[in-house]
Length: 422
Ligand code: ARG
Ligand code: ZN
Picture 1 (cartoon, rainbow, N blue to C red):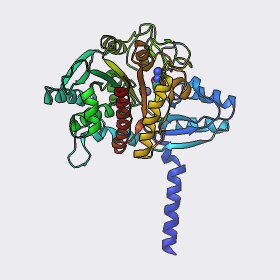
Picture 2 (cartoon, rainbow, N blue to C red):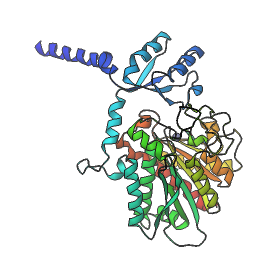
Picture 3 (cartoon, helix red, strand yellow):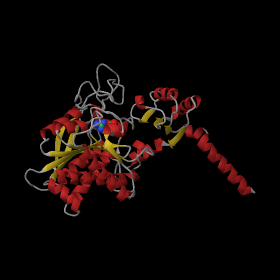
Picture 4 (cartoon, rainbow, N blue to C red):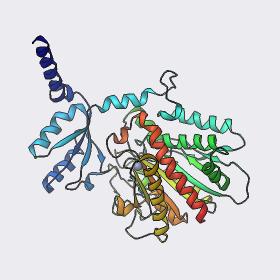
């Protein structure tokens, strides 16, 4: 009888924790589905107020009926947001009940803790750590790896790309891969680091890695948007854009993946500096996008493959995103993307959608992939890594390893195909 009573008390406490005031003290992520146009309008408004941060879709104008919206709701707005949802008959599911805790967990691993058991490549790293890693990697592999300064950011941080060149074959092809164009997508730089590590560790050990490096030089830019990345570590974990300032407005930052010269700032991007998809004042107005564009222009004859790494949604996209027109080698790109996706499914039983950007997600002009494609790099991809919204941008460190393995499978598949085809 007594135990039953105690049990009952605990159960009630538990209930209280879930529904009562305790949850109100936490940052949460909601998944909200709308049914009517009125609800869509309410949600569009709401997502720009109460310090709520829209995770999905990328910008309020893309909210539409029947499509789940992922919204980060800070603890102090939780009550307001819930009331508003209720008033307008919207239900929500809690994706993350304690986002603050997850964020803390991700930053804990800054310096390698020997007791934690996970390796350097299974953790997220601060910008400073990534800069030392770049230096160390070049320094430890003097005959095969070079750090190339390709430019600097708005806040004057250096943009270093590593060049991996494992043999001296003449007229070698090359591939370019960049990570971290969007600041909050932490799994992206984590992949670039693990990718370099994998290539250097398994050359002459694993056949496909050897084949790739025998036939291609590999350029890797681990953090395309260092100012934004630093900002996500110090001020706002969910920052997306770069950190450029403009006299005409108080809003900061340009979406670097809307700043390239590919149907620049047409439908799918915004002229509003406060928007998450602000295209900037003109194409390549930003030092980061200009640096990458300049580098690719100078090396376009050797670079046969361009890959840009993002998260989240698990997709392999190819041109075009800036128009619904088909790319001239669409069937080629489709075949390659399908093979990559099939390989991921076979090895890891995980699904990656694939297709042209405009038809698979949304019109999004000014992207680096479309621009590189129009420059003449006919194999151009954007890879969106894990997950599909469970953790979203806050993918826990314990999932880094698997996410990187899946991405590695895709990148290897694509690279080998390009070697075969060009
Ligand atoms: N989620 C990415 C973005 O919004 C998708 C990029 C696809 N490519 C593109 N050119 N828009 O930037
Ligand atoms: Zn992105």
